[in-house]
Amino acid sequence: MSTTAPTTGRGVLRGAVTGQRKSVLAASVLAAGHQGGEALVPVVVGVVLDRAVGDSSTLTLLGWLTVLAVVFLVLSYSYRFGARAAERASERAAHEIRLAVSRRVLHPRGGAENGSLAGELVSVGTSDARRVGMVNAVLPFGIAALVGLVVSAVVLLRMSVPLGLLVLLGTPPLLFLAHLIGKPLEKRSELEQERAAHASGVAADLVSGLRVLKGIGAEPAATARYRRTSRDSLQATIRAARAQAWHNGALLALTGIFIAIVALVGGSLAANGEISVGDLVAAVGLAQFLQTPFTIFAWVNGQLAQGRASAGRVAAVLSAPPAVPDGTGELPISARGSVTFSSVSHGKLRELDLTVPPGELLGVVTTDPATATDLLDCLGRFADPSDGAVRIDAVNLSTVDPERVRDVVLVAAHDTDLFEGTVEDNVRGGMPAVPDGVLTASAADEVAATLPSGTATTVTERGRSLSGGQRQRVALARALATEATVLVLHDPTTAVDTVTEARIATGVAQLRRNRTTIVVTTSPALLSETDRVVLIEDGQVVAEGSHAELVRAEAAYRAAVLS
Image 1: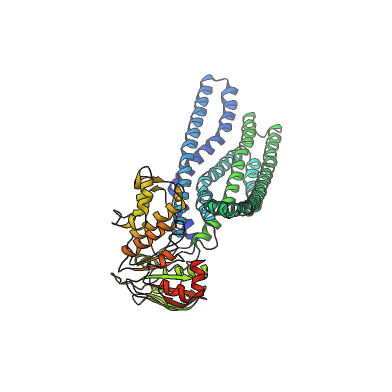
Image 2: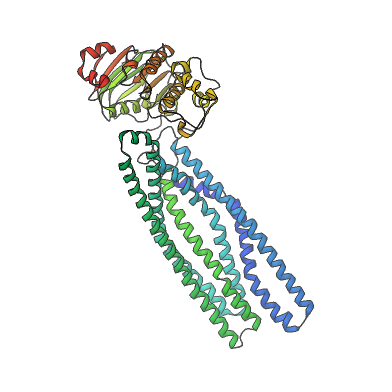
């Protein structure tokens, strides 16, 4: 993955949309052929009436009917292949935008997820990306509609200057009015997408935490929360649908009035003998045909309004400032794994001083869960301290590229998810094989023994086909399999029974011997296997020693680990 700074959102959007210019150009030419052919149909019919029928010539009639058939053949195939090219350009642009959003969300420097639920980011990367990609699908038809108008105007000018000028001079004001009418739709579409994305995020949140909600009896509160969110989304959708209906209705009314005026002027000219009967038929046919390009304009304008609203949301994600700046520092190729906190202040941490020698298994107990989160953020360089420094082998992490930091330091969060695939795939994580002892140390071998195909058993998305304890053991095995120089584990055994927890504690201590390991937990089984335990209270280390020593000497420690 590239570690370059995220590019500006609007530049990425422009690149994704304009990158399909060849397909858009091909679609525009083909669609223009279709609309031009549609405009020529009433003209050819008028010629048939004037020349073939008027002259009573069968040969001339057959000739012009052949011309009419050729016109139909050309416009039919032009539409078919033009629509295909436009759809291809739309899907490719949407795909590029989805990739750009995914790269930004997964960027090592983070920041895109700040203030957004996971479901909202999914909505931006799917629904909004599709709407922006639709710009490439609608532009060729907008251009084709304009070509149809020009062809109609030229033909009408040849028949009658007033008719041609009416179309040429009346179209620009009509298009400007269409743009103004689309403004409310754009605003309401943006709100609709925001509310829908928020509802999706809340739903994803509730589903992922369903088991916890049931455990604490919070289903009614969660249901009420989602009902409110869903109601807001529904109201925004209804308002957007009303704006869409008003937009379409207003444009249809305007175009209907315009077409009626063209037909009336043409009829008046024919009544005065200024144009022939064939010309009148062609003029009326063109007036009816004009309904098609104006309907296309209404559709294109609506799609562009929605696309602009979605483009703003996509650009906001792509342009989100990174959580941490880039770095030019380098960690040693073979890091020893010493960790030092020097007067670190971040969130709940207050001038924290802590030294972890290479190879130590350190237990960390915090009296405030938020303190543990802030500690993990600094160790993984998900955030930089406001004051002080975190160093690995004397190298300040704030000067090192986040991706390089994570090559040396692995922070295994408490709420780590599994991926769809086999148990082995989840543990290997892209490595050629699972290192020896990993499954045993994490007690994931017991999980495999209960599954129908062992480690080859397929698990569903987020590992929901496994129990909470099974998921936790597989996730711990995945963390241990990386053999990271510095491994940070956050409450890795909260969902397993005490016997299994004791086995895991012994297994982790043996497997990670002589490699730096920091376990942030309140589990007595894990803490009793550590080389040293530190107690952090009010953002500072207030006591340290063995687990047994701290249980005897520190009331705050006893309250944290034995309650």
